[in-house]
Image (cartoon, rainbow over all chains, first blue to last red; front, top):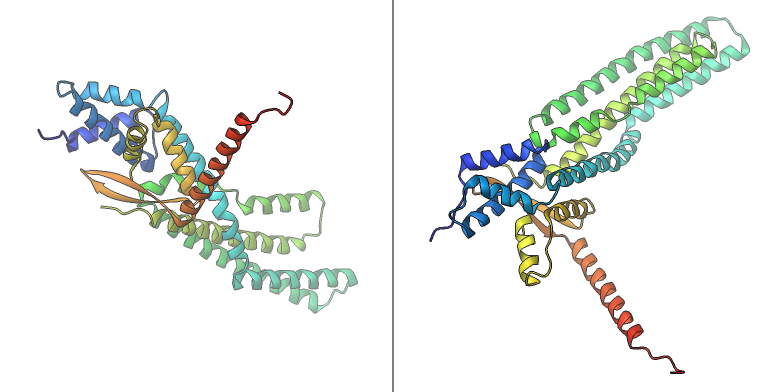
Length: 235
Length: 88
């Protein structure tokens, strides 16, 4: 006697059943679907008079109370964990990149110079020069930052084709933005009534933070993508 | 081995005395995977994705270690049970 193997419409029905139980992640659905289908096939082979719908009920019972949900919750937990474990090495790697180091040195030296001039109260052309170069670097950094965020967005768009990783993509996007820290920095400066000249420095820090942020997020995505995608063989 | 195969294997090897629940199996598989103990590969079988799990080298070593620890624990437990107090 031939063994019963579920056809495509039945598999689709099973998939709908799994989704109706509140499972959203494509990765989990695939995993449960295969197991569930095997179970249903076994039930149907054991009792050939049993209807498909009854077999689904039997198979679902074997997963236990909230069985699907438990698997999905654990999966989500693992993904969140993965974002954080990958975030740290990604941040370290980005921190070591030449661009960031150079920008940091440039910003710090400008800041030191401005600070020095302010301290000595020298109102001369040197001051103008420093302000001028600070504005220029602000523009440059913002341009780089914009470029960085564009790269990150393009990376996101590329990966969006993959339904499996949509879930953790959202997690990466939700990662704390270094920008918000900079905003806090600015607010504290306003509250402390600091010389407006320093705003240039603050804006530079802002752009530097943004740059670091977008690159780190991109690197995190890349790392996770490598880790997850290497294992998946698609049709 | 894929998920369903694992539950079947556990059931058959223990002659039905051990039942591995799906809700317990997958979370632990995912945990082992994130720890790098097992690796996976997906294949299309009968029109659906099937995820095969396999022990990595690290996982193999870990299972050997854990088994020896378990063996040690059992022997010491047996020794404790066999032990007779000297004043008896």
